[in-house]
Length: 73
Image 1 (tube, rainbow, N blue to C red):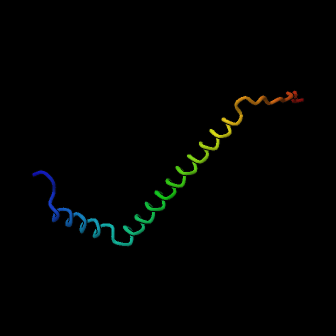
Image 2 (cartoon, helix red, strand yellow):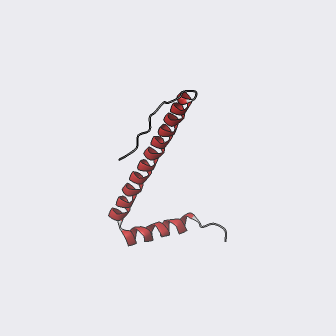
Image 3 (cartoon, rainbow, N blue to C red):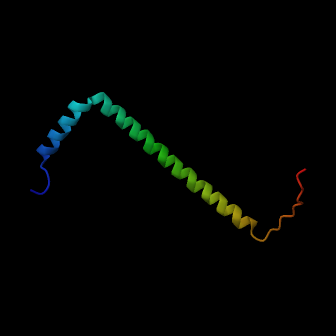
């Protein structure tokens, strides 16, 4: 009574196809693929921005920035 056999999984797959239809399953697959691709691109951009800010911080160490404060009227 442990795991299901291959026949159980094939019947479940057949029921899912009958309920949703192949066109809806194809659209769901496209949407999921697009979401995963967008997530990966976002993660890549996040790591690039983080490495740029670390590099800028390393360059700014030891530098003094002289600014003059102005009062807003």
